[in-house]
Length: 107
Image (cartoon, rainbow, N blue to C red; front, side):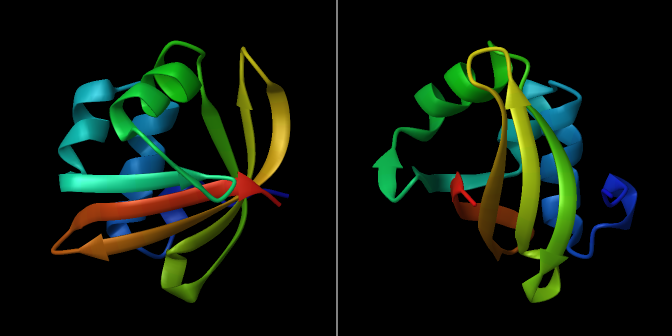
């Protein structure tokens, strides 16, 4: 069972998931704080390179299974054309309505 995106608890995370699923790169990038960082499976990655490769050039999509931490931690069934579907956990740091860091990895 998944959670409808419009019911996610944190408005910034909700907008992040909405932009990602819509493949709306400009809306997605507008949600990132200047100097935002991210990690994948515990290793820091270049956010611009990673998002193009894992999301925008490979049709990345999030189906949110559950949320915790006020909507800032998500358990997600993530799929893209490169890796197929996998269960992932996403943790967000939100400051002033922008994502300053997100961490993702297999759940």
